[in-house]
Image (tube, rainbow, N blue to C red; front, side, top):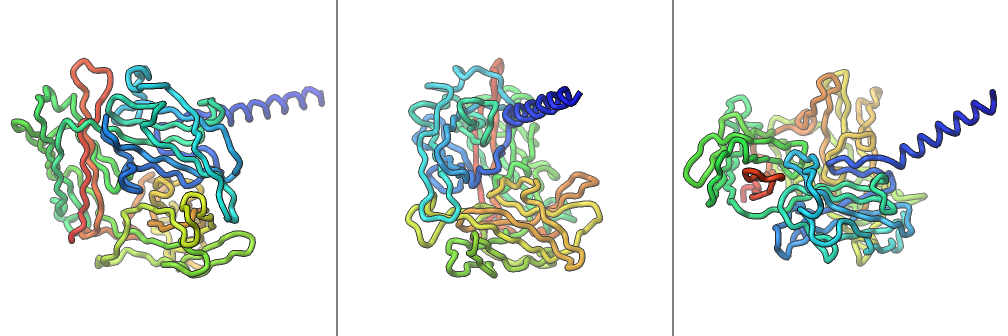
Length: 422
């Protein structure tokens, strides 16, 4: 009997290990291993820009990440064409790729003169091995040992073929109660070639600050004019303006940067930020931010990618829960605005404050606090930050088109604007 029980537990353990090694990729920006940090993906023309490049141009994407386990690993990658709502297009790689379908990441460097040892991996797309040949949404998949059942990172990016022009305007909300808190986006798609059925074949997605969680889908234009489709419905594409992002500067561990209260370098780098207060004020305060972005920088080294160290960043929010059933999260582009255990704050009722900490690489960071109501499942970015029409944000519009009889959607237009008033 004891032998049977032992065999049962061995079998159970082997099943658990096999399950851990046989995960499935999700069609989202996600890190699957805890030692993988600082994932970056942007158009090489501008650091931390939205990862959009033009088809058959000389534009490239820069993709990089750190492995805190150090050493050198055999990481492979591939890309997959996706629908506008981020599902597999279910077409062959022959249809959307030139070259081979997967390759190894061979460009890596070891960290230099850092307490936290790591290996920095970098990749550019398109490259000599893998070249997407049609427009649309793509998912970059990174995995171990050539085995896609061992995912490491999934990263969304876009390839646009500029077949239409998109004009965008940002105005105050048309809804009277939201006029001072929300920003409304109106846009027009100008096309030269006829679009037979704009209701079924064309789709436009509007996003705030490149955050996928803010995406609004438009499937029906308000007006159809010769050569243009107008999207200006009164209640459509209405976004809370939010507030300027909070920020901190950890480029230097010898001197305190912006919003840094204390630095400790005993066993590892620890940075305590100044206590944040509830930002839901009745009046807007104009501050300069980077619309949620982060930039890897260090004051002492030569190479930002390999000479920048890591530190445990401690956040404090001086506020009380707005309801009894919910959680606070600290988010920004540095963690893909994802609400998970690593970004969740802990509430101390005796001090009436929220506490949290995250391991981050040296640089400049934007962040904000978000409330998740567990009863409704909805998030609220205004409870601790406020929401104002005057807030500077960027907005992106993506236009997708499925030609009659086609098997996939193409990204035929993209536009990006800033509401910043100079």
